[in-house]
Length: 241
Length: 241
Image (cartoon, rainbow over all chains, first blue to last red; front, side, top):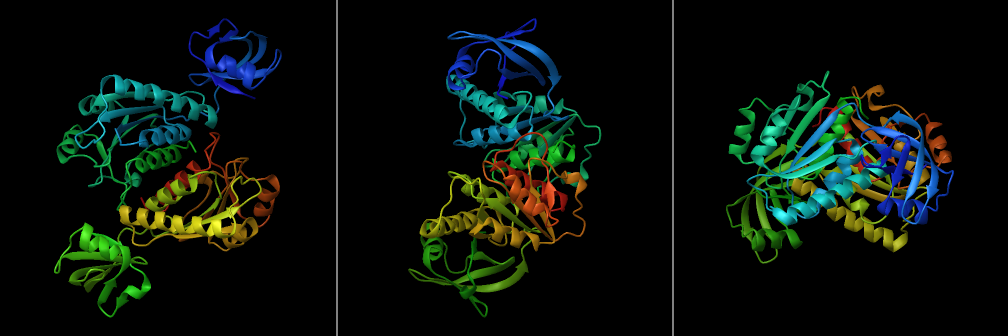
């Protein structure tokens, strides 16, 4: 059954009204008709609907059943990623969405080469949101990960420190996964560097806050490989695979 | 210290002779000189050397010390990947190499869309070997993963079944990671489908051999995300992260 995400304004009573690109997609590309079944998702809920009416630019659907998404992980995982070069951010968003991340926060650290600001940063975030939505749809997620950014290093650390289990990936050492307990953890944040990793001052400022450093072993992972691998391992360690 | 992989003919006694592109890279790009230290790797061994002489197309190095690579995982992991479309094979090779895979075997299954044969397949494998070497160098691996292919489905299954722990990723169900024991496992093979997944006949033929099906949960992973995530999780489960 086709699945679409809706925003908060789409649902009124037991009627979902779809407009814009999704309406065109449902009516013209998928050629769906009155009476066809369709699923809408929002914030971890799934609305199983029947199409009531289709106009040239709107689709009206009746909600038959509302269920919790069966595909959302029990863990809320936020990936804090220092902004990478080229199109690596896109790859990170797509893969971390499939693997179950709840939020991806981009920030600028000392060694970031690409440092988008202002309108350019805003445009990137808009594009990233579309990539997250596309990946959420394709992988059967019940919600679209939030894309946030582009924060300063300090802003990102302030957000990270408030998490139930904050982790800081550092290539110069720290605890391995086997030394970190995920028992009872429902919220985790993990901070990952850009191509050049973190400056030692940055690392000190994070560990001084009592945030655990995570060490991924002796092989050097590229900055885009690290968030994907870490998300996969944490989802497995918390029973979400 | 710069690191290069050498082939078996490069080492004679305690002298390593480098020719070809690497010799040019050492002499011209890196501007290394007589007396400089350099490391060569082969099959999980590292040779710590001093440069004895440099000519326009050769570099002669003396081995001072031979050590086992500290970066190789204790697990030998073979990824059996049904041939994917586009440039996904390159991404899989690069990421699985960084994460520690020993071998990547490509094969053709019923639902593969891209089915290279003959010269085209040979050319692809040659390019893939270069990608594996590059990723091995960059991530500090002690050996370059073997790239094999392109096998038939039957050939791949025959190779998989001989492994100590053969696993078959199947989206229609199987054991989760928590139900599979990796205790004492030193050799693991994991088979992954292409975009369309596996046909039910293919799945039956594999499970009838007693090979364990691995289920990665309800979220649908793209065919290139699966090998990366599985390699990361297995490396963590075997203490290699």
